[in-house]
Image (cartoon, rainbow, N blue to C red; front, side):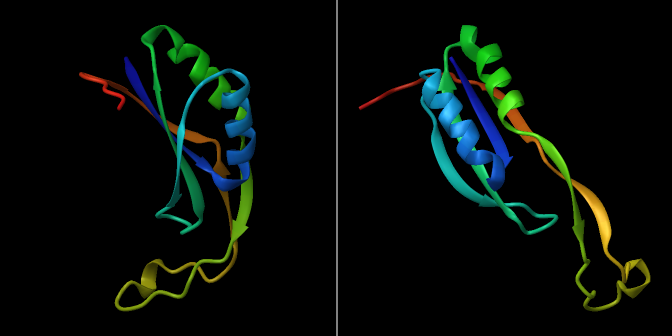
Length: 109
């Protein structure tokens, strides 16, 4: 048994959720927030048999895509003025961050 934890951008969440449902993969969906851009993310907790991990990873891969986004950095507070960039910058967002963990025990009540 494996636990797949997938952190995806909110824009990709509905497509991934629909693809998981269509494939008969059960998942728990949690709202989360990214630390870098403070943007909304969705974290999927997916418990699955070891032989379906590749299938789940492929569903995530095809549902979530990277994109570029222009962000304006916030003005720094305190002593970090020397590292402040005062103009918009392009950053890579989206895609998915995925962890696959071994599950020692699984119970369902």
